[in-house]
Length: 134
Image (cartoon, rainbow, N blue to C red; front, side, top):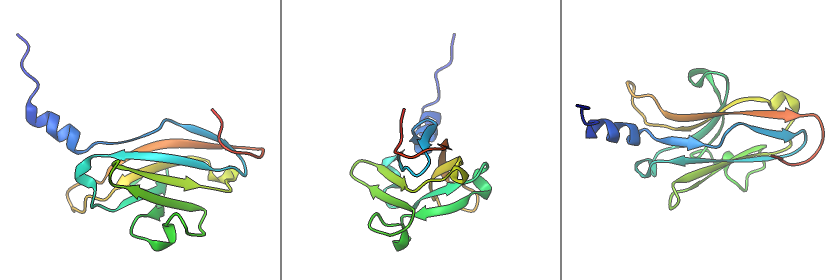
């Protein structure tokens, strides 16, 4: 007989849940908006957006605890958290080909022995002008 899937394992998998969209392409000079969905238990945690092939060494571009990253900020990258919908949204504008690469949505869990909850996607910026296309 097949043994039951342990309920604690279901909770463990669910408790580390963070997801985002698939890989994206955007024309040079355009903008992109990325939603990052998180578990309700992360409402009070700091959310962030970083760039790099490996999460452990990625460069932070925006954080919910950084006023410069706020949606009304003048930066190229902004981040906005909507706790009622359990989603934070990252916007990047005026993209260039050099901005192509791996990006990470992250939620700080704040423990030395606990990895942050993260989800990655690849953004390709292609020569030209305009906004995101499918």
